[in-house]
Image (cartoon, helix red, strand yellow):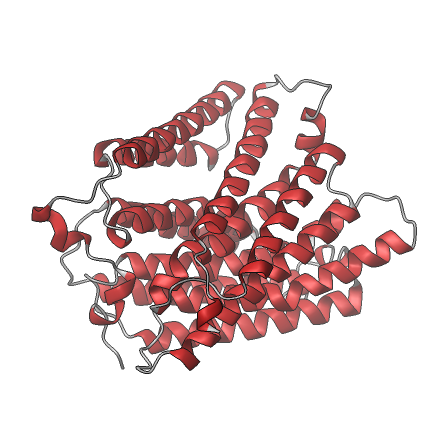
Length: 419
């Protein structure tokens, strides 16, 4: 299959574009609603209505799984590109069309079915590329945390997306005209798990050269959490239905709380391993490391809220997905690709995002909400300016800093202790 491999750079950029457009539409609708400026005509009421599924289905998953897998995975596996290129492009096309339908007509069953078909094409391409690399590579090098995170996140989607598609098909064939948003809310647990796996994979990769940690416990925790959570969630959907799974009493036996408990436990253990590995290491606060630390801080806030209030990790992981995405983008462009970008502008983006995040975690007045939205918008503008300048100049890092810009994924096994 190696001869059929094709570069996934264009497809990966396409997925990131889908995530960026959906994020701007969903984030813009949220800021307008908080400021009381939401128009009551056009697509804006639709965007406000489908804000949650727009962020979950068209921002988190396309960026963390589909986008980074196509941009990064071939290099991490030592391959020329992704296998099954036609299936890969078909997945991007279906996800893009489903996003347009969701924005125009709302998140109706046909749009979600197209999204399911596109995601299945995408994750099958990712898994086929990973498994095929073991057959083509003579030297069986261990997978990096990034590869494990992408593989397990794709496996979660491969097992749970057909369940969502079956529920949507039943909704469509039965002629039911009810709101499907409660059904999509029931799919939030797999998205939470995907964010956990892909996010921690990127965070471990960001500190791979400087940290000293054993990969086997990390892989074991990720794998066990994946298996347990998928089984619990699927069993709950078959027993109670997708919408009913989010309406169970607040006990550990309900599918939602059981998956969140497993995610919380895994988050604590993975963060503990990461901190133990970096405790005595000489870490430089590079831009990807800043975003990785931001991811850990946001998730930690979610733990506290989950323990004290019984909720909070869910939304914290969704917000953490943004930090993980920027961590991966700067890691891919800078240390993995070896290209220059204006570091001061990238740091300013992180500071603005951190300030907006801090405001969002506290009870806000209307004026503070507007400030939070404004800081978020300014942070996104800084990112656009940073990447625009980087791609316009498109120059490699200087020779003096080449040692610090070696591809992290290519040497991740050198920065970790194999147990």
